[in-house]
Amino acid sequence: MSVNGDYFSNELIVDQWKREGKLIEVPFYRRPLHEIVNETIAYFSLEKLIEPQPTKAFKEQEPENYEKLMKNAHFMIVRARKEK
Picture 1 (cartoon, rainbow, N blue to C red):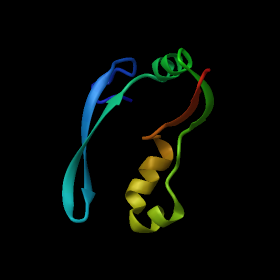
Picture 2: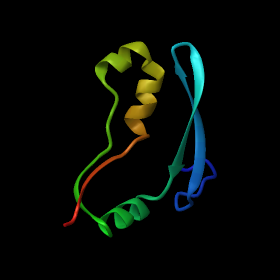
Picture 3: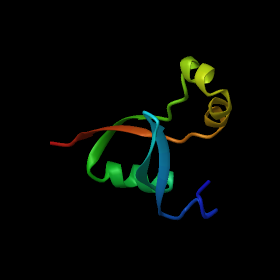
Picture 4: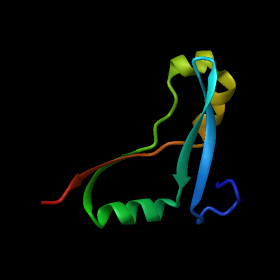
């Protein structure tokens, strides 16, 4: 679900990640799945779509976040090839 509660909205989100003891800001856009897929296939051939899950090593390091990420996908990877 989006930050504003509307799955179909486009949102710029700035998340904070801790890296090497420092907080860094990571901006990204949240869009509905149909928009991502339809925009991609307008220009590319879709080869694969992945919603990765956390690893066992992550579970050992951050068990609370592991459980959260196992129930809510936070990333999507699209593999596409440019049509000739």
